[in-house]
Image 1 (cartoon, rainbow, N blue to C red):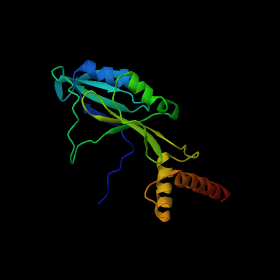
Image 2: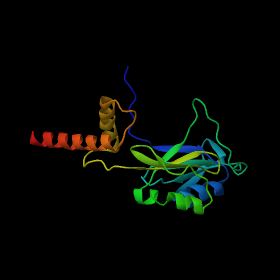
Image 3: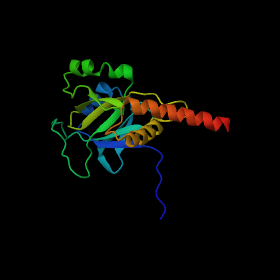
Image 4: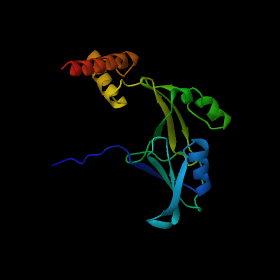
Length: 185
């Protein structure tokens, strides 16, 4: 049986609270431009806000003026969203702690993930948000996923528990070498 084939994330839609809470957080805190709004076409008493997370795709939010934020952690368990991660530049990442502190937003502090750095905090509705920055730039013609897949192979062959800088450096070297080998013919 043939598999379905995706070509990337088109958009993410979240259940929000009231319109202003959504705009204040997604545009005001995270800096995602508000693109447009219209009614939720499946529930016309709700609004549907569209934001650009920075890559031309969309994060959309269903709003309802009767829903108010309570800031409680969202429930976990099978089938629920644990968190949503957004990419930031290294220059922005270096300012996140200060910027979150200035807004009075509690956060995890910096987390070293081996191949990326992350900071976690909750939105006004309790959704866990991760802001993350890769610690490497893929070589020309390759993606972050290409580098990570190669680094994973190198890590497993080495018997290491998680991807670290040494695996990334070797992965990038291997990918560049492969590209040169293809060019030579």
